[in-house]
Image: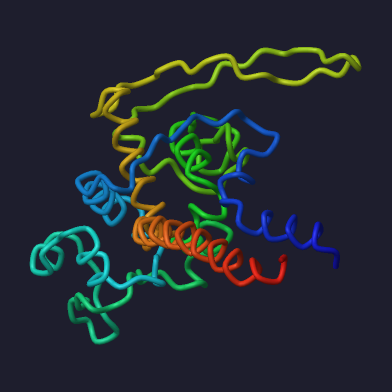
Length: 255
């Protein structure tokens, strides 16, 4: 492999996962998350365990590590954010992995396939995809679960946040492309029933949830960035020292 191809391969490998998430489908909204906002991450953890963990696990992580990173006392986390039991029926311990009690057989029977582990979903899909996905469910009586999604058409997941957002219908129009082919194009949402949250409050709720999912996908991101700054500063200083040494070693030879 040439040096040029090697550099290109390294650059491609270092690109964030969000760069590949947009695809050619529905346009994505900017999630605008902030992983340094600890209060947002705490609210996102609450949203996740209350609305997502009934079906999805995140068992690459331990509750104790989440409590440490998010600044939550372990006793508070145990009493408010852990709702599962272990194999013996005892309450899940703080040091346990973030699993749920749904097995693959039941998941496949209920949803057609086992709901995915969400620990790395932010890296595989991207935060903008998740943010838009959770805000674009609409009522569709032709689907077995009664809803559909603009970002993920024919989705098998129910809209678990519908009580917060309310029920919505999607308005489409038929358009003809340059080749004369007709297809449906989304126009707007029509609110069928009000949710318990206003549109702005719901967007903030989803943003906190996506922020927490981003943390699950890369829990050491902020620490890595902090260390990376010091590494770059060291390399710049070392570069100056190396140049000075090179000049010192070669000055007599040049004479």
